[in-house]
Image (cartoon, rainbow, N blue to C red; front, top):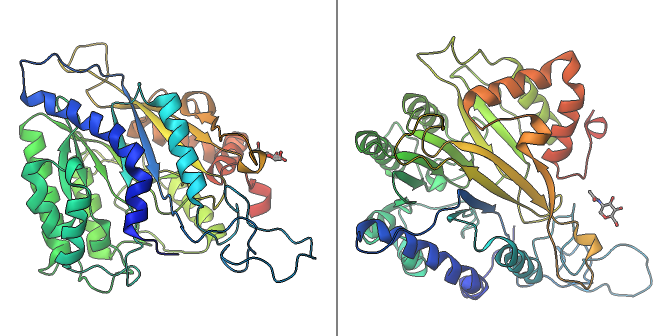
Length: 412
Ligand SMILES: *[C@@H]1O[C@H](CO)[C@@H](O)[C@H](O)[C@H]1NC(C)=O
């Protein structure tokens, strides 16, 4: 993937940052009881994988990664679009990212409590990040307003941090580069080193949250899977997730561009990289799950993997709804429970001139019949999709997985 200058990122994110800053000032309220509590709406945005490329050139050839104009203007072969080149190996034009942020600002700005933005692995050299304090202190400065002051030194040392999202809700943002199998600069989680240090930090944070009766969302870039995590780190991550299942109300990841969920019950898993086989692998995973009640000692874990803004398929963003239940009122779900999400996509081929508008792709309640996003509900969905009678549901799931660009017949 293409690298871009950090300065470009910063200028791009400025409108977004202002907006995120106001969210941060809301978080600050919790320490200052004299001020009125900020309104909470029960919605947040998960956005991932912008992959902005400042060298993207509309009209360029697709073979040049959308960087160079065709030598002759004769052929009718497709060229890079103004807002991107879905299905090709090009990154995103600045225009797509800017228009995406504009749409969010226009439609959602006043209803979002916070934003989950799951970073990237495109450091230089690619996929390689050790305890490079130059890079981490650079990001500490860049993201200074977003990282609580008591977390600055943690972030500078490892690129991970904790941040409160309001009363009794906290995000633990992981640096998944340290668990990533492609990162040669780290050892696994069972040997002394930065990966193990981060895993210990995660465990300490989860214990702390449990003691404080705070619910947690865990977020990162590369989703935990036997395909992408070092086995020792995958093992520890799933163990902690199961052990703290009643503390963690969500796991949010990106990186894979495909809209799906992973579900682990602690059993052994096969590994694959091919996309067709990846879907088969998911099928096997969903079919082999034991009911949550059978595994009381090892609860199921659901990992949310959101599709990207980068149009590998079509650009997509996700708005979650979560339960606000500060006082543990009965008749409501536990505080922080994910209730559902709306998945939006933009059919960029239709917007050559007009401002980009995202449209609703699906809603988890209507598309999948999910009353909430708990492990029990996802278990039922996985089972339903694997039934003989669940073919239609499975087909919907696969179409959504590739943001309406492929159906399950094309994969077969
Ligand atoms: C996107 O737009 C194209 C061109 O108008 C159309 O053919 C296609 O069906 C649209 N796709 C979706 C998922 O709406």
